[in-house]
Image (cartoon, rainbow, N blue to C red; front, side, top):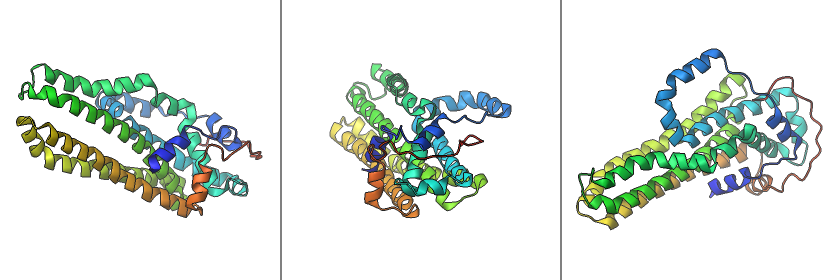
Length: 287
């Protein structure tokens, strides 16, 4: 699975590569006051969804940062220089994308144990009370609630990993479509949003279509049918988005003049053993 391969690579970024170090250590642009004001006004409405869908939230942020960093690097004059090194064009883009993901320890924070406990506890706090007699299905809900709870946890895990993988690949692909700084972020968001909205829409429609069958199984205390329906929805969510990620991955490889074998070698944690590349210091932050 491309999701597992990308996540293994993200866990071991090329820490010693000078390009990675320069992007990670660069300063961030300060947000204007109006942006902070709008964020504070919208916080009560977006805080809970952003917490539950933190993979989508960070995927949205990272896909813009990655695409913008690559376009800015191209305009700085260093891009063609790094292409001449063993990492090549694909390797250079991969290094920049991992630097954007690990900047300010964001990757470590969103995968922390405490945040996962909070994210899983919030939806389960709405499910567990129904076991205490609030459910119209009585004792039958006690049998189904653990099954539903396990499904929620699996879906959150899969959505987290695949959403960030989609943001990573969309950020890599967007600069190959548009080199304009003002448009590349919109292109990246369009690619990422297309994958996310398409997946959520298809899964939502199928879930809605299967809801009567599931509630009928709940009413008849048919745990097997309920488990089959929930398992099918989880597999549908995983497989369809995995197909989309494979399509994005192959497009990235083709547009960056690489091959499957070369790309897999480049994202290998041992691909950059202390390369020495002299790069000019940027006058502006890359992200």
